[in-house]
Image 1 (tube, rainbow, N blue to C red):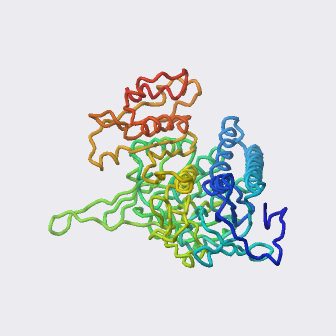
Image 2 (image 1 turned 90 degrees about the vertical axis):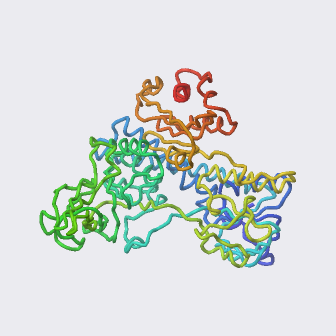
Image 3 (image 1 turned 180 degrees about the vertical axis):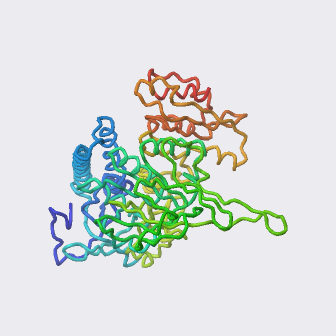
Length: 550
């Protein structure tokens, strides 16, 4: 049953209130799975979704699946050479967007009918907010509907975090990932603010389509949570695709450009280029840094009065990838007493002009407008719904599932949250808890996918563990050679005395499949020798685990 949808039935004016067993706010993975399960158990369920464009949740509509559809289309364009000319690039991009829209529309329709066609489920399209501990009002196109429920489940996901940069909200051509995946025309130039894994997926994708991509990173270290050798390999592969990086780069303002594009005023610490140049000024001469959209800055080697010498903030595809952590430096000079004295870091300002800007600075739990205080639901310091190990909020009979509760932002974690909640509703003697969850894997779909599970080397070292590092170049894997994809490396961390697998990092073709084998072994407490001696089919990427764990 549906209310306020394209095929809506209007709520009779004599029945403005719905009383139900369960109300689920949000149509995400955990919520929709729970709705179907509750319905099958004979419970009456209301599902409230703010937008008809979001039936099925973030993953299906604006997240995992549409982005992977575009990534696969971009890879195909690169393989076919369709990214080589403006005409072929536009045609490939147009076809990719058309296919992405077909896939998301089909999946959205299937997900909608999977719930709305059940007699026990009512889908209401409208924004919900709490009016009390067990009461919610949903603002629909036909007017407000009041819902009273014995149990309520918050499954509203996350929304892009937008930094406080002047002009970021008002300048045309500035997008979140949602908008950038639905453009009709391919941008020839793209600046990405943020170099987390979401930003890097889009950098890789658009570079494959033929867009000139520049990534702005706030600090000096690339992927600071990853091992340095892994981060260097990822960066080298992105640079080989043509992606350029500016490190220590702060975007100060964004405004429309004269040519209809976007202008960014950017400050880069650690550079000296003479006088700073404001975006609304005329370039003042050769002493200034002039950067085009490719991100290739000139390295003048100019030295200021403090003795600080700048270095270039980008590298070309042929540069040494291990240089990524030292993008700029400040020289020392003796003080009057002979002790070293450090000069203050220099800063150069310049403009970037581009066709489009992607803001990829993370996502934040989507709680705006829910009026959680009316139900007694508290938030954490980071703005997520506060939950315990059973995903119960601070209000009785209200749970929070998925990204909104501050856990790992993966669709499969939202599904895991459903399992935690359902184990409390189905009469289990011992409910499944968040603490029972083991070894969450992750994959980033770059041109060469990067997947990891467990601890990396820097985390194992910080924990004081006694470990050995296993390494294998992907070029040594026969299937990778057959696929003509020998790029990357495999790395594993194994506890020295026990053989326990502590973690694995796979930068390899098909790593997103192989990482699940490693996770399964870790979940079963199988030692590294199990994967070393396992019989795999040949030729496969999975059989590389024999050699990696040898």
